[in-house]
Length: 120
Image 1 (cartoon, helix red, strand yellow):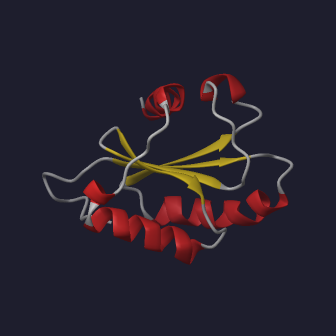
Image 2 (tube, rainbow, N blue to C red):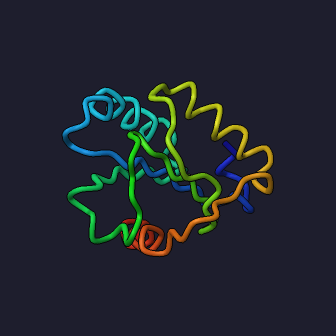
């Protein structure tokens, strides 16, 4: 990730979209919590898609875990990820190196609004 001490440091958000009944999500959650502690410059948000269904709009999450990565309010990645810390770290590193190569083509408006409320 970029150095958060830089004056021009970007604001990053990593959101995991999971479900309480998902055993894979249960296994990933400790990694998520450890990452959140190790990277305080990055906002980490855990979203239970059933508890927070109203905040997701028309999104249909079919694969868990699904990851959303946002930089300065712009979604760079939205999709399923392997439930391994190394896979998430590699994705974040690639996005940090060149965020212009990424992009999301679906409407994430309600989900992005929910993330903004979580960070306010």
